[in-house]
Length: 357
Ligand SMILES: Cc1cc2nc3c(=O)[nH]c(=O)nc-3n(C[C@H](O)[C@H](O)[C@H](O)COP(=O)(O)OP(=O)(O)OC[C@H]3O[C@@H](n4cnc5c(N)ncnc54)[C@H](O)[C@@H]3O)c2cc1C
Ligand code: FES
Image 1 (tube, rainbow, N blue to C red):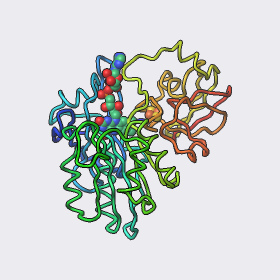
Image 2 (cartoon, rainbow, N blue to C red):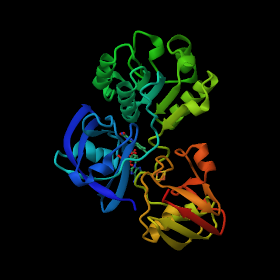
Image 3 (cartoon, rainbow, N blue to C red):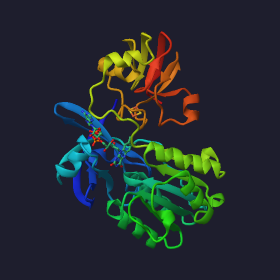
Image 4 (cartoon, rainbow, N blue to C red):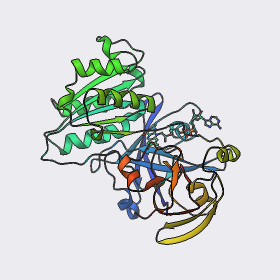
């Protein structure tokens, strides 16, 4: 079951004009639910105008190192991020699911690895958690961060990144790329493009020495950086990424008529196993697995409903589905039969899925 637990807000710090860092504490009985891996996120739920919204925020602190924190950047007109930046108060309770997500790394203290991280804007949050963890727990590894922002005063966690660099002198390199503010080195100003990446790899970053690349930012930027890394010789399996949004629907109600038009016009019988209980339900043409489950009051997990976060991951045991978008599952997971239920529509009349994996 998609279980939510209350967290208490113990501090709110404004890091830039448009972002807050929210410190959260679990109740003693819920502590175990909130053990997390570096790079994972929390999904919160809250009602806005009588409608429940779920929004995910990456944990920016490192496991076992101080309290759990998330950094929330205000999006223009955004419901949850606006609320967090203006109305949320110390002492408030927020409902959150246990940490989730697979944007993380294996930690091996004896290894000497070189990590190349790219973050844009609020995309720094999971990267910060990963960098903090790697630098603390792999004493021979190094981290290079390429951090893209509009201007100096919009940089989230600027001081924390500097502190980290100073604490791990010689093991961390930071390159700030600023869209608007001119810098001493021309290469560090403007948008990140294929040419800029190529120049960075030529003059500033010794790519053949890098073992793993981690990217968090908007999708077009992720594509540019991934292509540049591949062209410069990095193997695809050494590139990992997290997206925060890809055409996320915001609060717009779904247009059922349009939904029926876009593929998956197949009605189907869905057998669904969750928490050891199996139910058989009918799916209307055009419905996703998630929509069918929710319509039948089955409390399956979900968050973004945009194919981005993977909270709704299920395994297809029999039958076939088609995903409209997949920004979260790796190819090998798809080969193993995993699917995002918020994006999956049936291609066969009988589908069997399970969430207990
Ligand atoms: C795995 C993951 C991790 C994430 N981590 C972070 C993080 O660490 N930090 C962070 O800041 N963000 C993070 N995000 C993004 C975050 O989840 C939200 O998507 C973001 O904060 C915007 O949510 P919101 O409710 O404020 O905006 P929404 O209300 O969803 O609005 C989004 C946009 O849609 C527009 N909109 C809203 N309603 C309507 C409407 N009715 N009609 C037309 N347009 C509308 C808004 O103006 C806005 O531009 C993460 C996302 C994912 C998937
Ligand atoms: S709910 Fe986020 S990918 Fe389906």
